[in-house]
Length: 165
Image 1 (cartoon, rainbow, N blue to C red):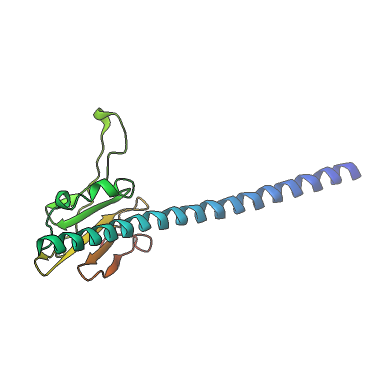
Image 2 (cartoon, one colour):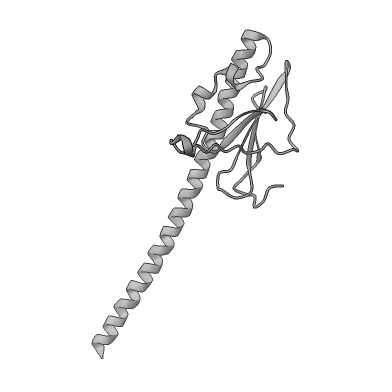
């Protein structure tokens, strides 16, 4: 009988250790997810800062701001950064993330729509560039913007929203 109690005691200890390890692993996975999300959000801010600097350089040379990504030659610098964001200078001027799969028949390019309530601005006096993405695969979008003054604003945080407004 003592042996049976001893075995049961060890089984209970093992059971509680498994529960503890399971809970710790869930916490680690949740933490890793938030680190990945922060890294993806960092890619949006890096892209917008690159575009801001490119626009400033373009303005110094030409006296006006560019209205295309091609004229800034910015996409060459941002291929690694464009993970889950679509960049907008205007409703019809956008740069999408690169294809996720290498095979031509499986090219998937995701274009995240610019919400209708956001206005674009591009003229000789200034610009607004948006980065729109989805960092956690839910219905809510993550939206950043930068202006000609270098103001970087996080308009909508994907991590804190359940649904799009």
